[in-house]
Length: 150
Image (tube, rainbow, N blue to C red; front, side, top):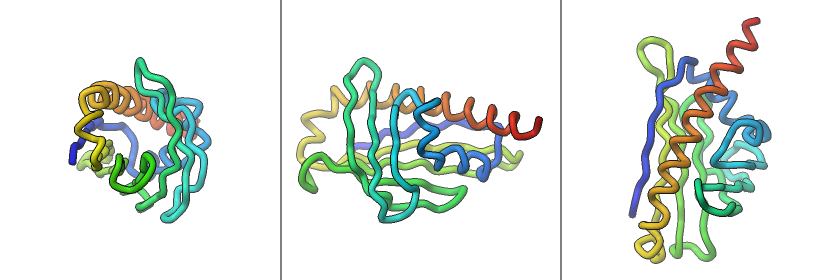
């Protein structure tokens, strides 16, 4: 197993961050790494997710939602071909901070026989994509909250 994990602290509550995270149609407006997410954020649902890693071409997967705990965790499992070939468990954890803000822990665990072969080409672009997504997500959350309070 290989894992990529990134974090960012966001100036909104977990509930406010959750609303932006699960507005799947809205991702196309702000998300530079996942240019499209279609579906419903509910356990067992199949999504259509188009990833566009920096410097790479877009790839579309059809993962299944494995966790959708409001204001806590949104997770899916995607596979390339058959199970065990190249599987990715993508996770967004929203952790409440003592000051009312939220820490996003954005991660993915990769498993399968192709992971060691693809890791070097995958790791850097994916980490960069996660960091870009995190920054854009934080900005979107703050903008949505500011707009709602006007």
